[in-house]
Amino acid sequence: MTSPDKPMFNVLDYGATGDGQTLDTAALQAAIEAGSRTGGGTVYVPAGQYVTGSLFLRSHITLYLDAGAVLLGSQNPADYPPVENRWEGVSRQTHAPLIGGDDLTHIAVIGRGTVDGRGAFWWKLHREQALDYPRPRLISFSRCTNVIIEGLTCINSPSWTIHPYACDNVTVDKVTIVNPANSPNTDGINPESCRNVHISNCHIDVGDDCITIKSGTEEEGRDRLLPCENITITNCTMVHGHGGVVIGSEMSGGVRRVTIANCVFVGTDRGIRLKSRRERGGVVEDIRVTNVVMTDVMCPFILNLYYGCGAWGTDKIADRSPWPVNEGTPRFRRIHFSDITARGVRYAAAFLYGLPEMPVEEITFSNVDISMALDAEPGVPAMAPNLEPMQRAGFWAANVRNIRLHNVTIADQLGPALLLADAAEVEINSFSTPTPSTEAPVIQMRNVAGAFIHGCRATQGTGVFLGVEGAQTRDIVLSGNQLKGAAQTIDKSEDVPASMTAEE
Image (cartoon, rainbow, N blue to C red):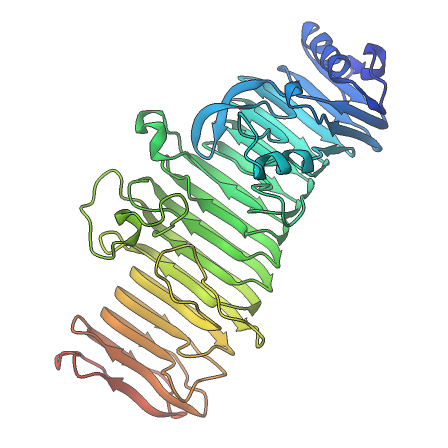
């Protein structure tokens, strides 16, 4: 808990009561300041209930909440003074977090205690639009290095629960986060413009996205944007929430080098979700997702460059024609998914929607097994304009380039198991469905330039294996497939050029 040469500062020695009624902010802060004056140490919070407003850590301080210790967020907004901070990708004045600090080094908030933000008070003010500043986060540090958050239970956060901004070397380990399903914007862990972040062994059950990786928006000014990079997420369970692991939509500074492994998602609306839109700019690249199991999700995979929230009805969202490529053009590339199972999927097996001027590119899916929920109702898989509701749709991708599917199985879908539109450089290997539709092809392609389909098998009872349409379709090659189970190998529409190659 503390090293031999660093003292411990018990908050009871500084006047804290822990009776669940008295405001203990001053006593808790006094213990922190005492530790800071001696060069650092551990501020010890024994079992009890401590009502507190904002606490500000100092460098070389560990805040240790013992088992049975509960920090109870004050219900008075005046106990959270306005500070310069970040909210939704832009610098602005916000209420200070319950636990926070700026420009610090070697800090930690650890222990088996609980931080209870008592957020219902804040959620009500938010819904009534009765706040002068954005709500406080539960734990938030800015421009800090060597940060550890470990072992805590965090509940009822007023808004985002754990939010490091522009920090380097952040570890979040063995943390439990629980916020009600109907609580607004109560994301679990949101690293923003951070480097070297390690999130592991956490259980997250929240009212918004479980983990979201961010790097600011175009409103901040591009000269001030910082990337979020070198992020590892391992051995976590994500329950409920709008998304399991999300990148964006605030990603103007770029997000790169992210690994997500050995996680379970249960009842998250979406599984892995990347979202952005025109004018936002930035690049999301070098992302790997492996060894993930999902159940009861609306859509396991979303890569959406038509994200509409905050810009519904504008040309940049609604226009499906190409725009000039410039610094405001977002880009998703080198994103790889492997060894993933999803059960009880409702809207679509996957939804990939690039821009015509900037397709999502270099995308792979390997060893992926998806089955749909037989009782699924229709709904829109992603927040993009003018989408028709989907119900048990297969793998859906438009405006994609250099996409490879290997050993992918889709079951219990309605319609095609795979639909590709406005795509190029496609490779499909060992793709199958045990539940083919007699009314739709297993694979449907529209305006696909260059596809190599090999090693696939048509289940007995398949109607059409491959349907092709569109005047831009060309260079479609089938080789080494086992398609005897299909009544018809290829169905070409009249607008497909005669020069299209299709060999078996």
